[in-house]
Amino acid sequence: MSRLLWLPNALAAEGLYVVEVPGWRTRGAGTMHHTPTVVVAHHTATPARQPGDYPSLGIVRDGRRDLRGPLSHLGLGRSGRVYVIASGKANHAGVGRWQGVTSSIDTIGIEAEHPGTGGTPWPQEQLDAYDRVCAALLRYTGRPAGYLCAHREWALPPGRKPDPTGIDMHAMRRRVADLLARREPATVHPTIDAEPLVAELPVLTSPSKHRNVRTLQGLLCAAASVQLCPAVEVDQDFGPKTRASLLAYQRAMRLPESGGTDEQTWRALLALPYGTAR
Image (cartoon, rainbow, N blue to C red; front, top):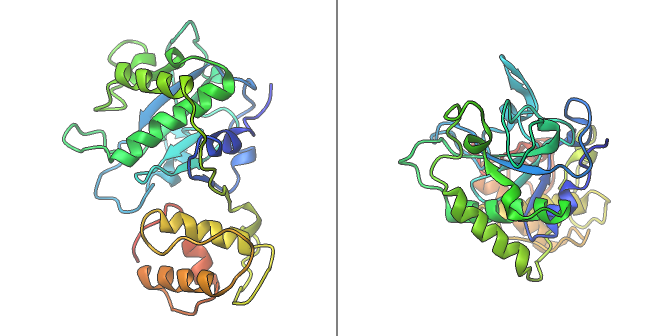
């Protein structure tokens, strides 16, 4: 028994943008099998009017009044960004069965941001990332695409759950099988680890080579993926390009345009999801 501490590396190796949500390493009741068998796909059912990339983060991480969090191991934002939320058991599957598996300790849950209404289209970048997230998990655990299921396919009695609405799971499994069969070299994006900044919000200004400059640059790359600022190279060098990107981010978020990381800017960058206007 162990925790799923391999999640960020497996996802990044598939070319996905990954955000490690603070506390994920110890979040989750108890421990998991090191190589869970089944991947379960969900939607969040959060109203579409909620702004941002992953407005469901708080409830998926912390749970509801009637169900203790975490409610999933991973979150999938509208932009295709993946949020690593928990390494231990998550309350996502409930009673069900797939490929002979009946215990949620043998499953990994993905909660994708979507209202669950048939008239709301899925962003293509999110659908593409959904396939790659599933391929990454199955590749690491050594399982074929048949070990991916929708929550509605897992849940008992049949008809108890509808998610993920609007996704043809037979077609999705075919796409995931193709990814598993013909893996192409992936562009590995820097994983954003917000953990070291929870207790420390250093004031960074240009020029600087502070150890947290890399985290700042990774967060700016995350913001760039939702068109809030230009992307930067993650090289721990707070030079003119990083400052220009930070200024653009502050402008887009209606923050004081200081060109440095005051507390307000850090908290905006760390306030997942990205892209929520103030």
